[in-house]
Every structure is written in structure tokens, then in C-alpha cells.
Amino acid sequence: MNAFFEHHQDNIKFSYRCFDRLLLNGCIQSFLDGARAQGFFWVYRKIYPVSRNVLRDVANQYHHWVEHSAAKWGTEIVGNPEGRRDDFVEPYFGNAQPDQVVVIIKAREPAGLMTAIGEGKKWHLETKYRWVNQYNFYIQDAQWGPMFVRVCPYFPFSTRICLNQHHWLAEKMKQAGIRFTQTGNAFRQCSDPEALQRMADSLTAQDLIRCGHKWLNRLIPFFRGQERRENGCWHQLFFSQVEFCENLIFRRRAALDQLGERLLDANRNLGRPDKLTVIFGRRVTKQYQGKLQTEIEDLHLGNPVMRSYYKNGFAKHYVRDHDVLRIEAATNNVYQDYHINKAVDNLIPLREKMQVITTRYQEVQQDILETFLDRGELRSLGQPTLLTNGKRIPGLKLDHPRQLAVMSSLVRFSHVALGTPSPRRNYKRLPPRRSEYLPINALSPRCVMSCGSSAPKVSSKSSHTLVAISSCPRDIASVCCFSNSSTRSTHRSPLAFFIPIQEIAP
Image: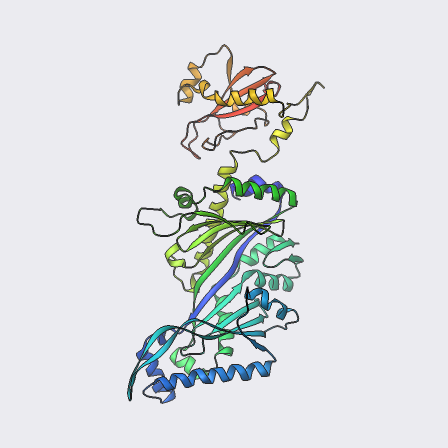
């Protein structure tokens, strides 16, 4: 449990963390070498040399196969739509059956393909990147739910697969009989949150490989079974884009709305190098090249997104569906950002790394929020207090101009009581006429107001924390806390609190 969750746990119904979007690139590594690709055609197809016409015939055969298969499946082939493709294909999944191709989008996109260079009987093959027409197969998978597979029709058939663990978890919970409510790619209700988290942590690289090979074998019929077994014509999968999210589902919409506004207002300095160093666990040196900033995006929408960039990725948080606070880490290059190899076999260390990032992101936010009031402490000060002897003490009129002036003055001159940075020397030097020192555990929990974003955190259980209490008019005390603890911060500036004198234990 991190500090952010612990601070707001009374308002949080449940939480879970999992991968969100997984974008995988697939290729046959042996065919990235032109000589080995020519060897394949000679050994298994008795074709030599491999000219431009040979490669063109391979692509034409695949085009014809897609058109024939679409007619056989009753699947529509459409052009590239305007706007987001996910919104365009959503109606096609309405009555989809398990393992059904619901729609095929044919669009011009970049891809790596093999090109033949030469003339006559002298040809050699090279890998080039070209803009070509590719097929995006949108599929309702029996295990992964909605997904898509993009296939380049040109040899060696480079691919891209898009999966979402939220859909995978939905299928798992249906099989386990767990009741849940899903909105898009988030769970707002769940009858067994602990089982949900166990399922999310049970995802392995074999689950990704099994799903990928299942559809690549069906959608790329060019390679025969013998060729796959003997020559290793299998697509290897690599991470292209990864999103990992931690979701906090709140009980009340009002509590999250207030928190969301405070996060947007107070965390605009998350893009500073010192903050990003803590979040991503990497030093930002002079040799760094890339984005280092925090942006608030989608202001025209109901739920703005705060995004902090680092190298090829970012960390962000936003509110969705009015009761879900999502903290998300994403990367477009897992090796450059996290020093983790791109092969999907590294799924577990990647999950551990991104989980640490989302946790640190919350802790950095909590460090900022703890210098503000967000638990209704000022509101409680305005309520009357009933002592054990039955005496009723009226609350503070915090909206009264005179009260506000007194409180402001106490904060401005709280450093006078400090005198010198050493708490022990302060204990001896401060004049005893109008002040006295108490251990912090002798104070009521209504010591509520902390000022200054650079002030250290003071533990109420610390035996090394002393409090200087100075009297002032209207039964108000100015309390300055001095802490020897250096676990959170090395700053020695005091924390100023305002409490009624009656709340100080004798």
C-alpha cells in the first residue's frame, strides 16, 4: 500500500492494476537477412533467383486469399475510416461470435518488406520500409475478446497485434463466475477484487505467444506446416507499445471530483527533472535528449489528462467514468526507457518495472498533497467541541477577517520561535515565559494546518519531535513542530499548526 492509497483509502472502494494496451510487432527474424530468404525459396519452393516478379506474385496471391476468405466468412472489407478506428469498428462487435473476424480494414501504412534488386539472373534481396496497403483483421477472440491483427501482404509478412488485458480479464471473470461491471477498458464494480488482482498478475508471456501464433497461422497461409517445423518460419513477438495502469475506484463521485481538481492544480511541476528521476528511477543528466515536461491535455473534454513525459514514454493520470482514477505508465521503447529487452518473454520484469513507476507517481503526488488540506480539517475546526466534562466550546470562525489575520500573522512569524536549525538547541534557548514544549504525541489530532510545500513530514509517533506552543488571543495556539527525522526530507523549516488551546493535553 503506497502513501497515496493509504491517505485516500476511506474513499476508495477497491483498486486493481494490470496491463491496458499491448501492441506487439511480429517478424520472422531469419528472413531479415536477404541471403537466408533466398535460401528458403530455393530449398522449399525450388525458385532461384528470387526476382521482383516472384515477390509481386506472392503479394498478389495474398490479396486474392483475403478477398476469397472475406467472402467465405461474410466479413466486410472497408477502406481507412475517418476518426478513431476503435469507434468505427465498435458496432461490428455487437453480435460477434467467439473467434470471429468481424471486419477487415484495408489501409496504406508503413511496413518492413523484402525488395529484389538486380536484373536478369542476378538478384539479391534487401529489407526496406515502404508505405503499402495492409490488412487489419478485427477479431473477437475467445480468450482475449476484441483485438486486431495487421498483416503486410508482402514477403516476409510483418505483423502487428493489439491486445488489451482488460478484455482478457473480463473473459476470465466470466468463466470464474465473478460478477463485475465493465465500462470500456475499466472495471467499476467487482464482487471479488482480490481474485481480480490475482488473475491480472497471472498473465504470462505464453498467453501472448499462444494468442499471437494462433491467429498468425490462420491469417498467413503462405507457410506450410513442414516449413514452419523445419525452417522455423514462426513470427517472434516483440513489445512495440505497452501501457500499464493502476485503477482506484472511488465510492463517491464528489470525493473524486474534488481530488481530481486538486491533482491538476497542485501537480504541474511533476515534469521537473528531480521529480521524473524519482518516478522513473533514472538520473536525468546533461546528456539527456528528449521531452521533460508536464502537460494538461484534452482540456475541452470533461476529463483532462495530466501527462509527464520521459524519453519514449510518459506517466499520466486522469479521471474516467466519474469514479475511476487511473494512473498509467506507457512506453514506446521498453529497452531505451527501462533497459528491458523487447521480446515478450520479458513480460514479468516489465510488469514489475512499470508497477514501480505507477507507485512512485502516486507517492510523488502525495508528497505534494500533504502540504495542503484535503480531509476537511478546516471544516472540523469550525464545528463546536464537546469536552468530557460536558463543557461545549464553540468552533473557530475561519471566515472571519480578524481570525484570518491572526492565523496569517502566526504563520509569517513562526520561524521566530525556531531561532536556529538545531531542535535540541532550540529546546534550551527559546524563552520559557510565553512558550512551553510538548512531545507531538501529547497533541490532539486536530493539529491540522501545515504550510509550505518544502516542509518535512512529521510523524505523530516520533519520539524525537518537539513542539513549541505560543499563546495568542482568542484561545488560539501557534504550534511549531521540529523534527530530527530525515527519512522524508532534509529541510529544517518548521511546520506551523493552528489548534485551540483547549485541545492541548496537560
